[in-house]
Amino acid sequence: MTTYDISIRPFGIHSILVEWPNRVEEAILENILQFIQHLKNHCFEDEKWELVPAYNSLTLIHREKPIDFENFKGQLLEWYAADKKEVYREKLLWRLPVCYDLEFGIDLKEISGLLGLSMEEIIKLHTEHRYTVYGIGFLPGFMYLGGIPEVLEVPRKPTPRPKVRKGAVGLAGKQTGIYPQDSPGGWNIIGNCSVPMFDPKKSVPCFVNVGDKVQFYPIERAEYDLHKIEGEVGIYTVEKIILDA
Amino acid sequence: MLKVLKSGLFTTVQDAGRYGYLNMGVPVAGYMDSFSAQKVNMLLENDDDAAVIEITMTGPTLEFGEASYICLGGALISATLNNEPIQPFHVIKVEKGDILSYGKLKKGFRSYLAIKGGFNVPLILGSRSFFSSITDKDHVVDRAEIPYKVLKHFTPKISEIKVDSFLDEKVLEVSKGPEYEMLTDKQLESLFYREFHISNENNRMAYQLEEQITGHEVSMLTSATLPGTVQFTPSGKLIILMKDGQTTGGYPRILQLSDKAISILAQKKFHDLVSFKLV
Image (cartoon, each protein chain N blue to C red):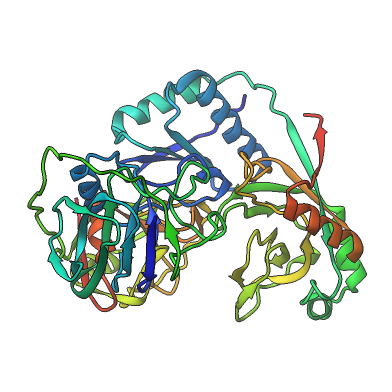
């Protein structure tokens, strides 16, 4: 496995931050996820660790014990150096249904003007690309997706809306994503995803993991309504494809 | 059941927090002032993760449906049981029909009510702590009923303690955050040699500070944040994330509050003063 020049810094007494080179790169993300596997499989003896990967960093938080920084830093570097073998990690592609009707895509018209693309072209571009999940945070189940085509880059709205509805699919700068719950937000809203991205009633409330891929596909209003009902009773399924490594 | 006759300004149920889901963006939540909440649980010989009621500024009026033992602590709010004054950090027996009322807030901001065995609201993702989008309610409403176990007899090992109050404490002990090194001498000076007022933007998610320091143009990739992380926005605003704070963020994390400093800050309200001390 490639070894990067990682840096390790203290982050309060309960956590420690490991950073990879400051770039948005799939290879870096994969290296972080490989290291997480290695830590879980061979290094950590208790279950009290929380591991939060995002873009080029991994934050390790211990729920109970304070971390002895100098010692643990040395230990982590040793573990990283020993993590030579790449393990098989299932790579998943989630196909997520989005209704781009104007009732949901409240900014479609406006950004069609801004980008000089028809609404159909925007929807085509938005659905034909696969996005990488570089992080989950900000709200429960909110994915930071990378890999958006340059022609869809549009600045966030000058004034955020006080309320963006749950499921709203937005564009902002180099990012696209789904609001997993009602929330204030400044992204340009182009549609609504009909499956819940976060469901606290499930033992795994968020089915997507960092490192997975996401691709949207357009659905009609009738199908959207059906998914919503399925979602309310918790019987929805999400289309999952296992990608070859 | 504990019957909520009046809910107060912002009353929630909180335990030690929700762990195991940070990588899915779920904030830890849990009692804001752990120091006080752990003390009231300790007096009742509860575990740290027994759920308590967190009261914000204006207290509720509550009627006990069964006998048990309670303990109050945290912010100083005058409280009465059936119109008789009761003291914080004392184990107090309650009977069916007793009414607990809160009066004037004298000092601090958040107060705790613990009950023997803890409040038994549903355990969701390993925690009873209220959090919108995870639990049904994000705060206790009028006429709500909060379950707890009936308990007729309990002899506490210690029935009262004197707690060193930190409600007047203004100094927040901090360590260097991951992006501390970006700070210029001028920014460091304004950060450590002055006091800051708490802005009116303060809640369980974050406390913003009124005064700004010189801004910056450092951009970074989104990375994890913790309760007690001090974020530094490009315009120079300081935002201190608290227990319901987001799990990731894109603003430089210049300082990290100690656990005790989080408890101290949790007792501050609009216009109170705080300062930072690097340890």
